Amino acid sequence: MPTQRSYRRGDLMPVMVAVIVAVMGTAGLLLVDFGPDGGSQGRGTAKAITAAAVARAGAIEIASEPLT
Image (cartoon, rainbow, N blue to C red; front, side, top):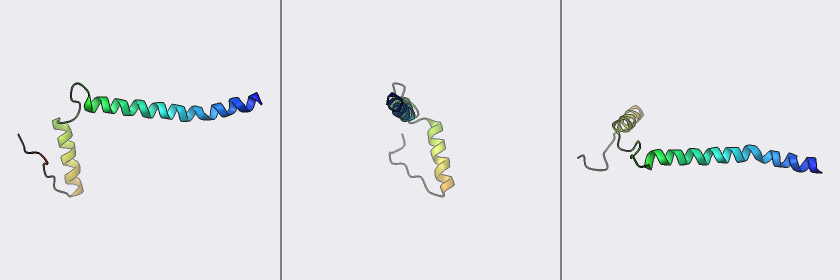
């Protein structure tokens, strides 16, 4: 019986590792986006990438906020 118990515990290891990686990755992305330095929001490169994706899709981008 002890062999079966350790085998079942081993089945959960990949799931636990996947959950830890997902949580750490999400926390890292949130820190980059909303962290102390402002992250990628509002940077010129982010706007250029968005504009390129919109143009490639054949859509028109309309600003939701007035330009300052």
